[in-house]
View 1 (cartoon, one colour):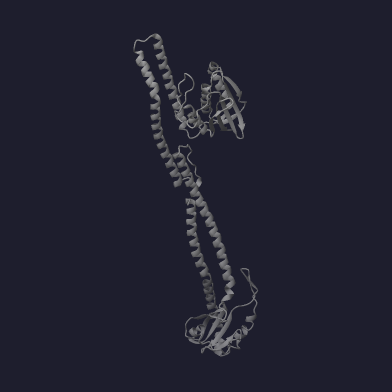
View 2: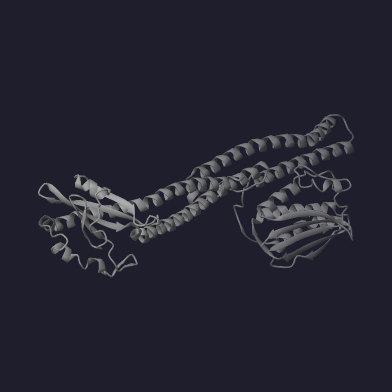
Amino acid sequence: MRIGLRLLLGFFLVLGVAVVVVLNVFLQEVKPGTRLAMEDSLIDAAHAFAQLAAADMKAGTIATGGFAQALQAYPGAQPGASIWGFEKNNVDYRITITDAQGMVRFDTRQEAVGQDFSRWNDVLRTLRGEYGARSSLADPNDPNSTVMHVAAPIRDGERIIGALTVSRPNRSLEPYIERSQQRILRWSWGLLGLSLLIGVLLSWWMASSLSRLRGYANAVASGERLALPRFGRLSGNTEFNDLAQAVERMRIRLEDKAYVETYVHTLTHELKSPLAAIRGAAELLEEDLPEPDRQRFAGNIQRQTERLRQLVDKLLRLADVEQMRALNKQERVDLSDLTRDLLQRAEPRLRLKGLRVRDELGAGQTVRGDPFLLGQALQNLLDNAIDFSPAQGELWLQLAQDGDALVWSVRDQGPGVPGYALAHIFERFYSLPRGEGQEKSSGLGLCLVKEVSHLHHGEIEVANVDHPPGCRAIWRLPR
């Protein structure tokens, strides 16, 4: 399982458990909290009404006195109030008054007058001087018909002469409770969705940063040359950037060490042959030789010395290119003019072999790149084509546009590349005989071409062709 998915699942699991627990607590507390608030308001109302009913209770006129007359129209009151979008057109309070023995003397609904309420907790506890309240079913067959009752004592001095109970159905609060629960659920789901989105973004950010680092590390391990991955502003000064810098420093040190070791090994191997030839010729020149032999051995020393010079020069150029991560200089380069300029420099060699040039380079065909490096690469491709061409042969140079790219190609009429060598011709120090009487080259030319092509985001290919037989090098460069 990918780390991004693991992070997302872990985040969602923790968030989901937290939301479920918190949401469950909230929903469980909404109804009790609302009923506690209602009980608090009933306590205040009961004590206020008890003070108003005390005078009539002392006079024994609680059923017909001023208190009863004032509340006569109360059951039919229509407030016409709008609370949070809920219309309230009736009153829910019910007021009952019992005497010191618990007998009902007054009821706003006139339903319980004369009944014995002395065993109900609200009346029983209040007459004892305690806090009295109860919640009971108005309909035994309806579990949702509970009614909250809160009583307050009616006093004559310090003596309790009755109890006034204010009651209200709990279902009158259900619209408000349900509204609160729905709002909590909506906000909870909204916050859950927002948190999930944040979790997805964070997981994507971390996974993408790690993926870029992993891709860079794999590319370095496979020998590819990539620029250090760039992270966004969120990752600017985080551990990801520090890790990327550490990987880059490690890559540079390891590559430098491997680069030096490889070059020392390969250079030592390549220098053995010309140095052996020079030493052998020098030893023979110390002897008394005929003049023709002396000149031949001296010429051999000169040729091997020139070979060493070319080898060192090409190694230095290749080393510079291989150490580059990106082009330091870019400008518009006309490949048509550049190729013709290189052909003009090679005119003596072309004439010496009697080679004809078929020019289909066109004009004004430009790409963006480093003119020096492009020239070095084209020079190596032309040198190969000239060296491997037979005398009186023909070189066919083409430059054509293909979509967003320019395709440069050179075709000769030489023997082509042996099948076993096609997969190795771009390797460092791999070379083939360049014709009769010619020695192998340094094996660095096509390696340099490949490196330059990579820096310019191009594609280089060398393949054998038929009719007429020969070899063709194709270089595709983005415009």
